Length: 99
Image (cartoon, rainbow, N blue to C red):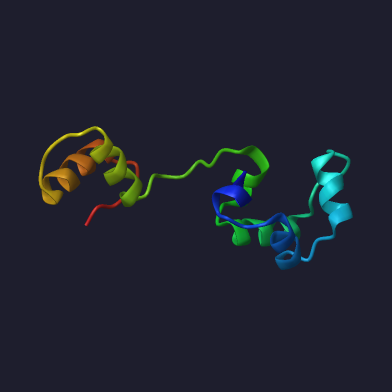
């Protein structure tokens, strides 16, 4: 799924991460699991965390861009400054800083 979203072929991912087709096939069949160093290389190549590769979830604070996108999708009018102020109020003490 990640390869398709990022327009990366499985073959190029395998090459970049120094994987063999046999290794990849064993993972797909759930006969073996990747080593940590391989997961790290794959996470960098795919632009996701190792946690996301392992669980499909990623516990992290939303980025400002994600918050702005979410806000804009709610079709609330306002200037960018208004949006950032409202997002800051929504974020509160989550640790994401809006400047």
